Image 1 (tube, rainbow, N blue to C red):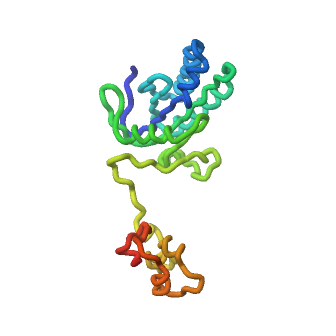
Image 2 (image 1 turned 180 degrees about the vertical axis):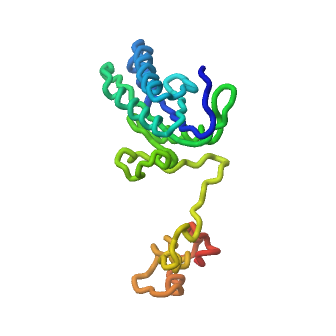
Image 3 (image 1 turned 135 degrees about the horizontal axis):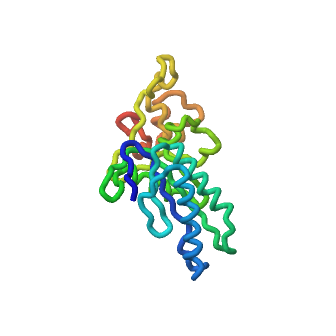
Length: 225
C-alpha cells in the first residue's frame, strides 16, 4: 500500500446496490461481473490520484487530497458503469457517498467520525447516485444549488456526537431583519396549526390550544404554550 496522506481529505465510499439478489441471479457469473466493477472503479480512482484504503466484497473506501478529485472520480465511476455492457438482468448499480473532513490516520488506514459520516451518506443513496455532504461543495467553489449537486444531503448525525444547532438570532442578520423583531413563540408551528381564523393576540391563541405539551423546537419554556 502506498503512503497514505494526512490532514484534510475527502473520503469516498461505494458499494453495489442489491448485491445479494444480484449474486443469486448471476450465479457463477457474479465473480466475473464483480471483477469488471472493480477494474472500472480502480481506473477512475487512479486517474484522479485517489488512494484505495480498503476493499471488502463489493465496497470500496477511497480518499483524495482534494474534493474536486473525489467528485470527478465519482462521476467517472457512474458513467463507466452505465456504459458497460452487463449481462441481462445483471447491471451493476453503485451508490457513492462523499464527505470532506480530517479522518484519523492509523497503521492500517483511517478511522474517526469523518470516515463514519462518509459511509452513512453512502448508505442513504440508491444505485447510480452520488451523495455529497455539505463540506465538498464548500471546497470546490460550486454553488450548492447546482443541478449536478441535486443529490447533496446535510451531514448526517452520528450516535454519541452532538449535532450542530442553528444559533438564535441567525448570524449576520441585520438590525432591521424581521426575524429579530419576532419573539420565538410566534414561530411555533404548533401555534400556527391551532390558530383560530379570527385570533389576533397571544391570549386568544393560548385559549384555543388543546391541552398537551408544545411540540415546537423552542420548547415550552420559550414558547409559552
